[in-house]
Length: 155
Image 1 (cartoon, rainbow, N blue to C red):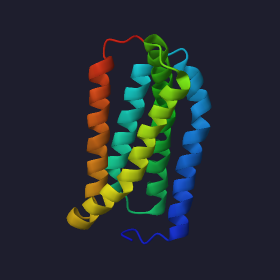
Image 2 (tube, one colour):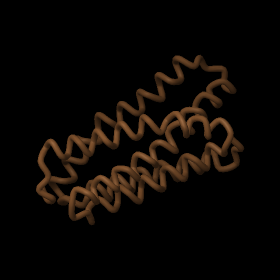
Image 3 (cartoon, one colour):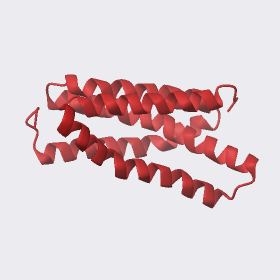
Image 4 (cartoon, rainbow, N blue to C red):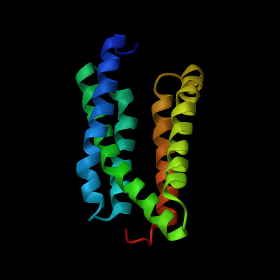
């Protein structure tokens, strides 16, 4: 409502973000097989954090699309590497891959289910910009915790 975007335009932006994130999984998945996965997660996460925190500064649809593209790139870089790290650690710990990936995607689903509700509460109480900064802070905290536990890993 701040940018006066229609539901259709918002849907188009979200579709572009989701499709590009999915399309980027394959090429960055190949890179995750050969590059430093921890570094890929950090790089992708930092890119996403910057994009999320810049959303309140947008003034038009083009800027929203550009930031969505950067968020998709961040996810495209980090998600395949996170998945590969999960599988590698799961194998080392002797867990079944089905169970481990189920737990991985359960955590993703919990975030997808609680995030919009929590952001709605934050928006109602603190205004338009707050959910973006809160989301960036949560992603930064998660990235910091991830780095703390895996900083010495060569993946």
